[in-house]
Image (cartoon, rainbow, N blue to C red):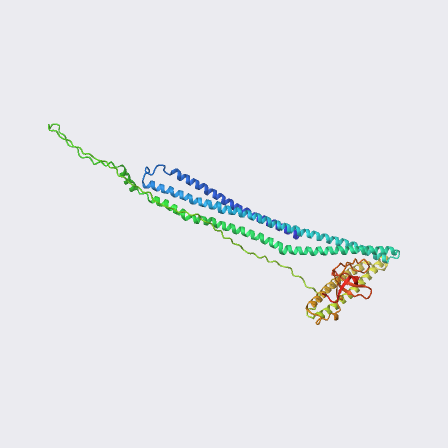
Length: 511
């Protein structure tokens, strides 16, 4: 699996996770909304119930029994209780649910922006990679073509049956192809450097920042949910004292029922007020004398009972919810791979001048070994050509093995030379930065270059042995002008050749 595929999988996983987080937040918001609707329905039913059983008679006509007064107190407490539940419903709707939906929309916008930034950065780095691979393949294709032309030219050069014009034509074709190779090589190098820089920026800066933003967003979502959970419980806690008072009022109303008092009130309300009648006297009608009957009058007084309803005052203040935000700072630790050091000794324990001399000796020896190995390879090549023409001279299989070993040795020597020259130039630059003219003897060093020079003009390098250069390009002077108007120089890519001295601004020392 390529790193690009792995990153796309990672992006897809984060996309799913962050979407799940938002869905879960909205699921909880839906729970809060339905809880609010339940509270609203409950409040409405409680108030309808209290209104239904509340007496419609005037206060003068209402009975003053304690059981009736207690029931009215219970209905009043129930109405107050409904008011407290309504406060909970309002807080659930206006605060919790409203804030959750607003925060959910903010999360959606942030998530969309972060993921878009990630996709743009991912697409950009993949385009850079495709362009670099394209330039690489183009350079490789042109180089293989140049190798074919090189082999063709070498065969024509040693063929006695080929005309000089054919050899010259093959040479010109090879030169033109080498120029094309050089141009494609430069384009590949530039694109490779650009891709490496973009890749470092993508992995070390862009990707880290986007992941940090997504992580912080997800953490804020979890923190917000936790605070909302606490607010839901705290809302009940804040209202519960007032609700407890309502329940306590109902209990007190039950305790206030006085059966004896109610019975006495009934007696007082419905007693006649008449005296108990006396015994009837015997009437003897046989007696002639008249008797007078006396009667006593009575007055019925209806006592009046004044009843007083308990006077209560319940103060209810709206609760306020204060959400405290908590943020965590998370640092991402990035690791950079260790680079292996050169196997070549850098003579860092010596002075700059001595280090240069030691490195120069090493480079000279490597070039000497390279010439010997190259001559050995050329000899094997000619021997193989002879064996192929006259098989009786020997078997070419042994020569192929030796030639493969020689090619490996040549490649190894070239790599060592490149490392040594790079290290040599670094020592020269460090020496220039640390020493002035009185302390560093440049003339005592046999440098890889006789100094530095800057190209004043472009030079196409069409002639044999010449070097292509661009204006303002920095070059190393390998061989100074010997009076013929040409200077041998080497560019930063390691290519050497002659360039017009008049095209150069030569500096005596490396800058």
